Length: 339
Ligand code: KG4
Ligand code: ZN
Image 1 (cartoon, rainbow, N blue to C red):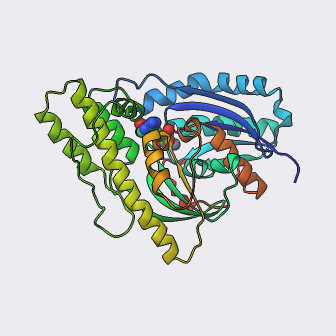
Image 2: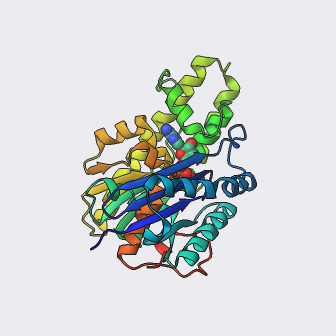
Image 3: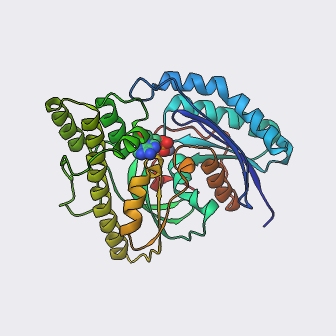
């Protein structure tokens, strides 16, 4: 098959990102602007995020084209994250890419953000279908079996907060900026993870659903009793990470057992999404899981357009393109995506 090149845009949350990727697994341009506007707000403000996407997207596209030494006519398709995510940002990215696709007469590809997180490892490593995926991000927390491009089985998911949300909410209670995950990881390095015990929610239950809201409440109750000096904060961060790693490990084993029960032979296991950038969790899971474990490098775990470009390439190779009336969608379950 001849080499195909894609321009891809990511605007589903607070990263405005553009990439150019080809089917020879080369990243020809990778532009990313992480919005600073939300830093002190404890979370992303949708209206502020969409305005920032509007202000920056066209410059980033121009700069990506310039850095790749290509022009629009040498592209084979244009892709955008079209869901799930914050609808304002999705509209900005999807409309911009549709306009480019229309003017250049190139196919448009509506990429599901979760599929992009799940497939990006295949740009870097030989990961073969079917494989198991644990997706841990700011918006999602779920186990999937990736059977093929566009073909997923969900094994379990969070019943309340996503794991990234749990990190961000605990960080906010500790007076830390958004996004809280990387800051908790940093402070935990100087903390004692055995000092506090938070509930290992759901681990006595069968299945691989998660619940993180109880841990959040437990942290909140503890903080009311603490003086909150520097050491206390570090110990809370380390104990929180200990708790999360115990839960993930328990649920990973249950997900593996579920795949066996479904008679699906799994050799490879991919952990992706923003929280998968956490080195502590990566090391813990690496030591204790008996499958071939793959993590994207940290900068491709958090939101980026390279993963959107790669998912676009995988879809283009199967001729899964979309018409220009494809509506962006804030909710878009991965098991329901169509070829
Ligand atoms: O995948 P992502 O960039 O956006 C979504 O698709 O949601 O994930 C963002 C989430 C945030 O909640 C952030 O706090 C968390 O990923 N995160 C981390 C780390 N880096 C980002 N959580 C824990 N440790 C990290 N090093
Ligand atoms: Zn994401």
